[in-house]
Length: 406
Image (tube, rainbow, N blue to C red):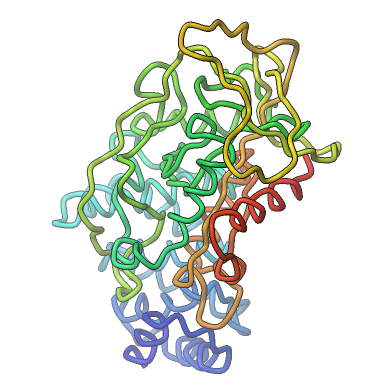
């Protein structure tokens, strides 16, 4: 059964009958299995983002077993807990055990301590965002680390098959290099494909200065503040909430290689350290008219509205005027609200096979970014593969941005 589970997870097979059979086996045999085997059987559910039909019985039983056997195999316990979190099941009693000083001392003294600390940091962030009713102990700040600062093995291996290059070139021609960031790492450590700032009127704004936390909506500001209280996640340079990795690699917040059902290391890549510049912003390069709604998730800019020029979409090349060297720019006027937009390029390996359902780690990342106030725009490979050339890609991105309703 463990071999079947491994095969299902590796090939991203979201077959309900097969997954329910694994769940039935688990329900009947959980008490007889050790934690290391249980983690292998549970992993396909989170990988496929699939709640088995017997989850109302299975999940409480898994909780009970973890409470009894968790200390015997701490690494397996963390893996199982991560799978449950991705499926939006939050066992408070197990969390209390995992965040206890004794448990933390055990796992952080293991050979896999650094990897485990990343997982524990993600669990702690998920508690802050999704399980605010939890009142037990949290991860000791001494053990918190940046969650994802390395490239995922699967993304590195498949980089040449990704649509990110096409989207990057289309964005460059459409809005200009100063109006988007690629592979941006956002608190509490999620790497995004592309980040843009937009006004509620649909103007794409330069990312040359970060919005002040004091100008954000209270709900977004408090969540961001909670995330930045994790010392390794917080502002490191110049007061910017963002840090930029090298531009030549892609990263995805994931639990490890798709071939693995246990804690595993990720491929080599340098940690991200560069911060956003604090120089005066240039005018917006593009405008996508959007319709206002009463929902405003984005933070408010402290310094108001940037000038924008409407333009038919898409142009053959960037044609809006940008200030020449030496020209002055007076900066924003009034009280413009900045909407933070993340473009998520969902390649084929980000989905379960032959479905439109994202794998669990990717789905949780999107969920958390939305909770932090970002507008997440999905760019699925099924749509991108129909795009032919840069001009069509620009037209496609225009349509996606116009569909936003701030």
